[in-house]
Image (cartoon, rainbow, N blue to C red; front, side, top):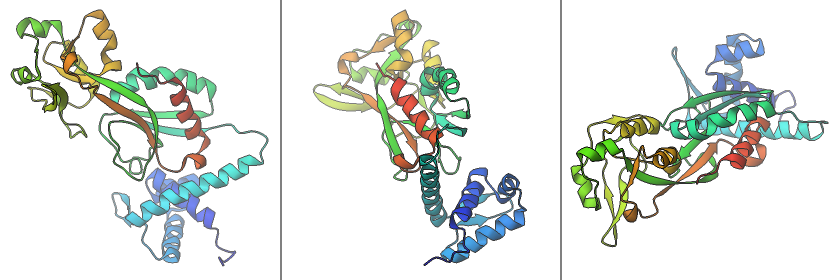
Length: 301
């Protein structure tokens, strides 16, 4: 049986704050403790558990694999404790800082337009939003929720599917004044195919040709860091781009971009998920209401 003089939840709470704030000094300021006291608390915790949780250096604090596991389980247990306390409270008001990471197209077309309504509904929550198409580590970046398009690989994460977005290859009328619109996937080889400057789960453009699926690599004279940058290059007539339909539907309707090889499109779609650490029933209220808000309002057409 555990000794009664060991405040396990208190140790977990301090350890979680060390991880989320990125160091002993920041956690010490949050708890009005000395950095030495916080460091000794974590050292005692490691001694009791018989495992090193963090690798300390003068520049950074990095979690060990055991530290990652203990952090994730501590977050769940602390959330469960918070849930139990709220269960006997008269009301629950979601609040606190919510860190959200999203790819640039989703952020600009869906997330940012939803922010005013969300914050008006939950004024005790403050949002910290980062838009990037690079896949981040939620634990390293101390992020609560991330939006990811495409297949999921990180088994540590819990995912809530927001839907699927259709993918389409597009080019600007100015581009097709210089180059004939391709009629077969094979003709794409002579076109400037714009792409991304980082590895993606689906590297090529899937298309149907003569009853079989083929994949055309995006090989061109420009590579970019995010989908909105790719859209702007396509609008400028630089080349062809494969983009989410929600991203370019207004451009297509206005004639600024033209869809390419739609009769060869194999029903090309990408799933979009909100991913987070922890179990759905034990999430902080601020995370839970944010996920519900997204799920209620995001629609891919």
